[in-house]
Length: 459
Length: 173
Image 1 (cartoon, rainbow over the protein chains, first blue to last red):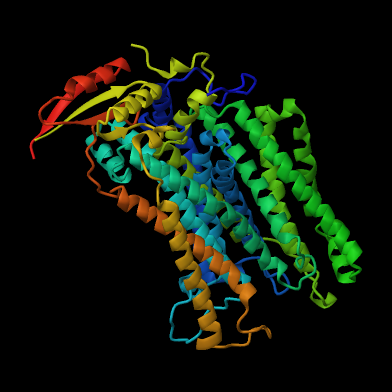
Image 2: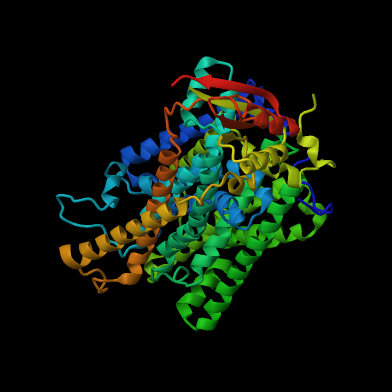
């Protein structure tokens, strides 16, 4: 196949198929380093703190949070929306970029999808805890019950239940189907009998037969085709939690596309945060190249600009609508008591990604890493601004109020960060972080060999 | 007695050419085992298009009908309840859940179809011909007749494409 020599190679270091298998399996076979143990100690401590705070909330009740009658949604729902949003980059990379035949996705899709699963797990915890009595959480499902009532199918909160649970399930299926051949590879490399048995069980008896590959390719493509509208629907539905209400500042039709763009924006930031560290620690610089980082940065500019335009459109429409409540909501957002949150949001999400127009900065790892953290913070504040500033000035000035999180809420948030990173650290020790088979299939067309037959092992 | 010959290649292009030659000579290829999907192999082996998309469509259609039908039945027939003055049969607000369940059912249908048809699953005990197949070897297994008349022809084609470890195996049935 002819490939233009101008194109940046996706796999560098003159790899052969054998080398790819060896290098990507290395983190699973080798012993964990000190950094890994230090990392997991930290993340498990955070997780334990979170669990303690969750237990305290459930034991004592939701009154341990800083919420009040005016501001009924605070950090809990902010964190929920933030985590769901982060998950969306994984599906975007593995589904939408697969449909667009973007070969650079092959190096990052596996870890990004894993990130999706862990982020959605963190997200799902918040509505559950927010119920106050999570043991009755099953009430959200429409099952025949002694109360003789059905759940409210007209409510976006119920749509959320279906959207998030379907999203998690389909992402898990998609991820696992993609993993099967690679688990087969790990199985065939394992020396210990026990590990071989475990990976054998997980590999579902994969043999690499041509007919299996044909079905595997077919199912991957169709699952991607299904996951692509799914990921768009999930955050659209999350946005209707707000948009279908009559709160000024929430009641806007722009929310679904604006939330989806914001989700992919924040998700890519998190992918960058994780992968810039992972590629270095696991010596995968030849697979996740600076070119990959640059491609992701380009998506960040695109989605970041959409988010910026959405903010400005919101402001314009608030003024143009002539509705004074709407106008006040936005004026108060920018200049009221929470102006600092609005300022952080605007700086991190609208201004900072624009720096990526410079190619030097797009390809600078340290800059990208710092920027990705800025975006993570900015996107968290976006949800905080939307939720808290819209609620804290109620219709009656007598019920105007302010909101501050308690240590319990902060602890639960830190706990979910702990859960997320613990899962990720375990993942990199157990499964291949890069889709081995997929990288091999793009090696000849996008590797940096001069002679394309060099993929053969020399004897 | 069943006889077959196995060999491996180090490059997928040799595999493709050898497979094509073998198919042209009307030899029966039992299986081709590769570390990653090889483009252009399916038509040479004469595979029909996979029916997984059809199964996905059927699964999705079932999910769609179940989800929409259930919501309509619950809200119109079983327990018509006024919620904010909205109509009982509120089609637009049934769409999100209908869509989600369509995707869910289609995904499950396809994954189960894939696993069942390929005989894959937890505890599946498929023979592993060579542990290097999932690494960097492209293996081919060709059926031979009992008399051994085809042996030379097959070996010749395989050798021409630099096949290695050519082995004839016999299984009693």
